[in-house]
Image 1: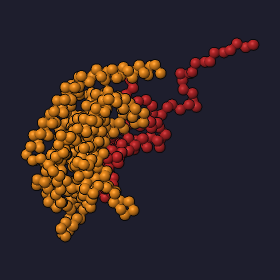
Image 2: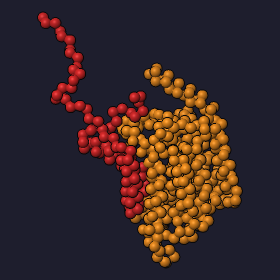
Image 3: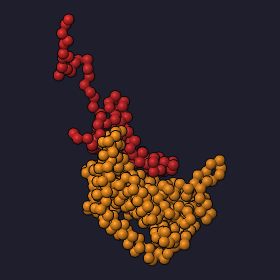
Image 4: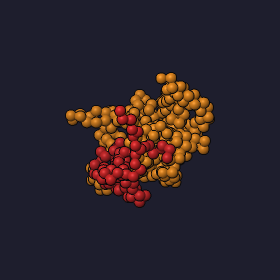
Length: 92
Length: 305
C-alpha cells in the first residue's frame, strides 16, 4: 500500500495560467475634486427644472452616486473589485 | 421655517462641540436630532394630491408649530423626551447628547420665522417668534411658494449665515477631521456602512448633508429669481421679488399664532441654548459610567449566549 503523500506547499511563483488579483482604481485627489464639483453642478442644473429632485434623500444620494458610484462603475466595467475587501477601519 | 440652515447646523454643532466631547459625540445623532422635528411634522404641512383631492393640513402653520397640532415636535420638551428614550434604550451618551444638541439647534433656529416654536411647552403653549421672515407654507402655494418666499427674504440671509459659519470651520469637512473626530465617536455605524462603501464613499456620505444644503440653497434661489414667472396681485414678474425687510417678503400672506413679545425671544432663546450646553456638559461625565455599564452588560450577554 503506498504511503499517503503530503500535499506540496503552494509554489511562490504564480502559475502562468493564474492572473494576479486586480486592484480597484482609486481616483486621485484632483479627480475627487472634479467628481464633487460635477456632482454639484449637475444636481443644481437638473433640480432647478425638476424640483422634485430637491429632496433630502435624492440630494445626499446624488453625491454618493457621483463620488463613489462613478469610480465603482468604472471598476465594474473593467472587472475590478467594487466592494471593499475589508472595512476601511480595520487595522492595516 | 428654515431650509438649508438645518443642514449646515449639523456641521456647525459638530465643529463647535464642548472641548471634552470632541470626537465623542455621534454625528449621526446630531443629524437625526436636527432632522426629527421636520421629519415628524412637515410631510402633512404640504400634504399631497391624489385623484384630484388634496390631503394635508388645512392650516399648515397650526399643524406644523401650533398646539393642538404637531407643534410639540418643535419643542425642547419633546427633544428631551426623545433623549430620555434613547438613553433608556441604549445607554449611549454619544447618541443621547448628539441628539439633544441637534434637536435644540433646530428648535431654536425656527424661532426666526413668523410662527416660531413653543419654547416653553408644556408650561406655555405660546409661540416664541422673532418674525425675521414670513412663514409661507400654505395649502394653495405648497412647497414652491414656501421656497420662493424663504429665498426672497431674510431666510436666505439665515441660510447664508450658517453656510459661512460652516466655511469658517472648514476643517469639519476634511477627511482628517472625519477620520479622527467623527468615526471614533460612532465606530459601529461607520464600520457597518463600510461593508458596502469604501472610504471615499463613506466620506461622501458624511459630506452629503452639507452638499445637499449648498445645492438646495443655490437651486431654489436660482429658480425663484431667474426661472419662475409668478403673477403677484395680477402683475407678472420676472422672478419673485426680493424683500430683505423684517418679516418679509411683502407678497405672502402673513400668518401668526398666539405669541410672546418678539423683544424677549432672542435673549430667552440664547439663554435656553446656554442651558442646553450647560446641561450637556454637566451630565456628560456622569453618563460615562452608565455607558460603560451598558457596554459591559452587552458583552456579558453576548458571551453567555
